[in-house]
Amino acid sequence: MGIKYSVQAVTRNADGSLSLHSKYKRFLQAKCPDFAYTACLITPDITRLVMANWDSVANGTALGMKGIESPVVYFYDNFYNDLFVEDPSVLLPLFRSSIIVQGKALINIVQSITHAVNSPQAIERVVDLAYRHNKYKVKMEYYNTLGKVLLTSLKRCSGGDAVWNPPLDLAWRTVYAYMLTAMTPIVYHGHTAPSTKDKEMAKSGRFIHTMTFRAPKSVQPMNAGGGNQCPVNLAQVSPTGGVLQCPVQPSHR
Image 1: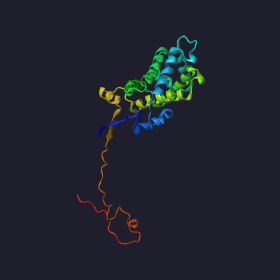
Image 2: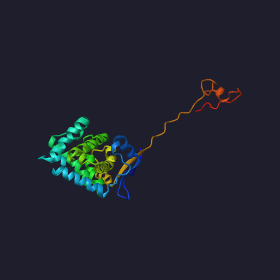
Image 3: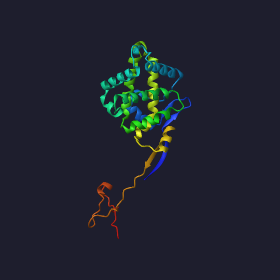
Image 4: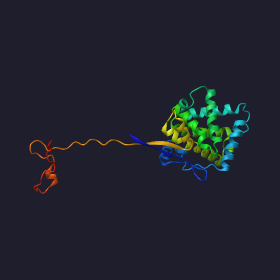
């Protein structure tokens, strides 16, 4: 028995930033501490930095990609090697198939991040990705590892410290946190086969909660003990020893 009601889990604020309902915010902070931002705001500078950096890596024009014939393949090879070193347990649920499919899955994640930058459809763009990952039992904490490894690989492929400066690092962190903010409620609930209505609500940042009511335990009447013995310790009720009448009287049926 319960009451169903909807909650605005993800809110797009007036300044364009995304923020989470307190329940989901605590979940994100516990599982992904490196990317748990109070509010994720994508500025024009962040958009420019992330898009330009990814284009240079994917096109092979980045300093760290010189002489590489297949830049995208080289990038995801680096990523998988880094991920295996960091936490190989993440590999199985997130990328279950062949290396080619795995590479496409990784690029899909990166493109979901870059395409969501400062977009009015930011939440909608990652909803399908989040539900798909739920099917593979991807835990929320895996996204923290995934984000750290993604930044490590991007830094190496970009050209290391010569290119990867604090503003670029912050830009990628913010965009990744932006994506996680939109995904958090979906991962929290863990639904793998959402209804059309559930998906439409998720795209607007709303989710159904259920308030459950429990029936009260039955209360049995207390009868006086056998004979004339009172079940209440009258010495505790009247430590002075005054004469008291037993508060529990035998029931008559």
